[in-house]
Amino acid sequence: MLGIFRTNITTVKDKNNVIDAISTQFTVNACSIDLEDCDRVLRIVSPQSLTEQTIIDFVTKLGFTCVVLE
Image (cartoon, rainbow, N blue to C red):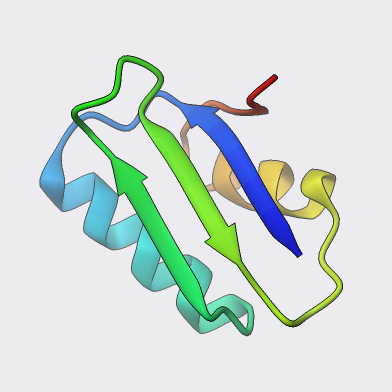
């Protein structure tokens, strides 16, 4: 699974917390958030068959906006 999402994560602390939470909850090969990009892009690569909605729901529960980047 490769997922690319737009978020509203703005701080390094929040970025690290979200990446840690995702890495703990799911099996991921790579997870990053680009704070320099205007869309605060979250990228996830996982061998697990995750759905985009699963990631959106998880990040939303952490208190952030997360939508599929078109």
